[in-house]
Amino acid sequence: MNTPTTEQDNQVLIRRAVPADLDILVPLSFDTFYDAFHDHPKNAPDDLATYMEAAFNREQIESELADPANIFLIAKIDGETAGYAKLTLDAREEGITAERPIELNRLYSHQRFLGSGVGRYLMDECLSVARRHSCDVMWLGVWEFNPRAQRFYEKHGFRVVGRHTFQLGSDPQIDLLMQREL
Image (cartoon, rainbow, N blue to C red; front, side, top):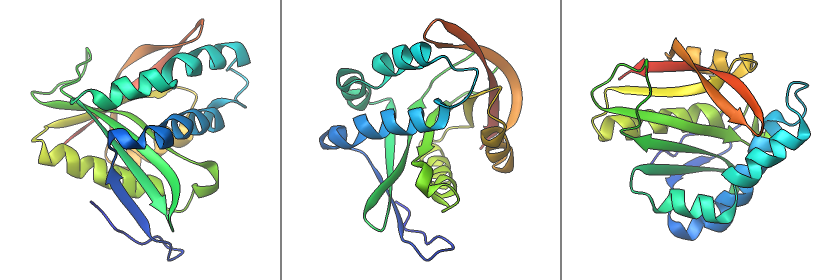
């Protein structure tokens, strides 16, 4: 896996997660999602809590880790867990044009590491994983009210190809579907 260096000369190490990483991934998933979305005025606290309790509990993450279609990557900077990504092989969604798609389900970092390059290095490794699996398209859903993430994905060659509903608790939200040919 990658061992790049950020502009601040911090070592960013990225490795594939294994089942023994469950105790890292559960709080990492929960904390990074909460940090990314809890203070947005369109997210009701109850809806956020309902979604997070279902999506990031121990049993759910353990099940996702055990599924061979899922690939989790963990990023560390100077030995500290900084972020993670989750990919799903052969995931399909209407509007995505691919023979061998891979979905980028999640790419999150702790807030204190924003701007450190961890997102860029995780993305580079996600693209490398996709190529090693002979995928022809990487796709993702990004919330319509998350322009920072949209710009990040556009900068990495993704383009909007559609929309779908993301259920956050009782709130049906709109995600933009973005894809990048590989």
